[in-house]
Image 1 (cartoon, one colour):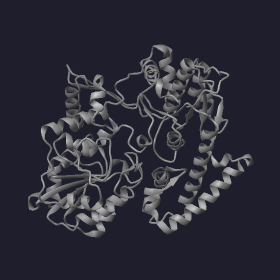
Image 2 (cartoon, one colour):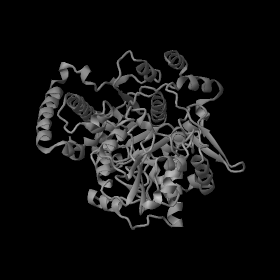
Image 3 (cartoon, one colour):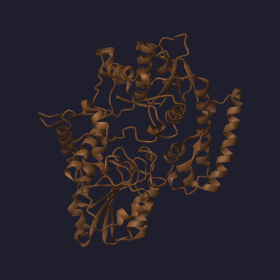
Image 4 (cartoon, helix red, strand yellow):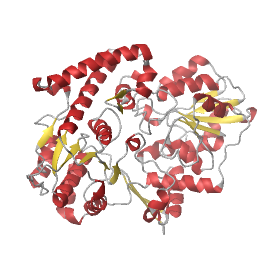
Length: 523
């Protein structure tokens, strides 16, 4: 990895010119190679066409290979918000952080965990979701009933210092723009995004070949791919042949013929025969008035990625309360299908062990990644998830899912979005409602899914590998997929640069057009 980056650094011809000017942008680091490349490319465009200098905000040591990667673009002015880099020149910063830290602990003691997750504001900006997500991503911390423990307090202290450092940096510098690569966790990118928007500084989100401008705080509280009702009209050029393409894609996805990682886990590989499994476990579905399918999330995985609106504290809280609810209505049989990513987080036994203790005869926990999701959707009347992909898949098949929170498709009237837990309970326990979508709603669901699945497919770079490029050959009715999941992008980039000119690359051309088109948003 280091050798490939060193090779890129030596050959990199994209150099920012240092202007004698106060006009500048702030790049925030995500510590990912694809993110570094696209952020530096954007900085180069702003430097070349608008004469902006570029500063870097990153949790990186001076000698880190990624620091040297940024420097190869001639980005020199680097700020480090890590508390481990605290200098005594910043005494006021640390004193403010420590004072706030103890005051917040007192508030948590009196107001509780839910208050912090749902209502914690600092510097007049909501940060409860970001800090909590950063806490529960490791060590099964979502199981802890209290936040008063060393792991959380350490993350809280580090986050508060980062917030104060970045707040001070933005206050001292008149940045015209901030670039970010993610809106989740207590990351430098996510924290800076919200603080910048609070100060009315526009934010450019760059995720591979997907880019989006933010100028309102509310945008940072939602999934970056959220689809709104005016989206189709505003982006007509992206929907040529969309219906034919999504139908081919869905056919291939549901039959296990997509090479996309998540699709393979849900529909591909060797699956258990559904009917045989029911017989083997003495499950007779006709004995029940309704059949439910509950698809919990991986409990550790970015609980608030889909937006801050979520009925429960987290995915585990939703799972626990939902299971305790559904065992009470014996007329409804439930399939519980753990998320395949729970294996990655070593959560594979949590659901099974929890349900086993209840000894419920109307619940069957599916073996992880052993059933095709299509069998579960088709066999069920009620489709229930937090905010997951299974909801939009069900909607594409004509079934209106119940969500526990906002998702990229939740504003399209193709899902039930209960306003509170009581409404959530009523929807789940309803043995009479027929949750089916009409043809028009199914078409909206498919169009929304197309927007999400094909989001990285409107720009095809010959230089930057895209983690998920999907298109369709309509003549052959064949999927054209490229999925690049390797952590090291620069072996591929170096190879591609030998054959392609960066200035003729579609990614560079489209990013330049996008930036120039939106120049009015620059502060």
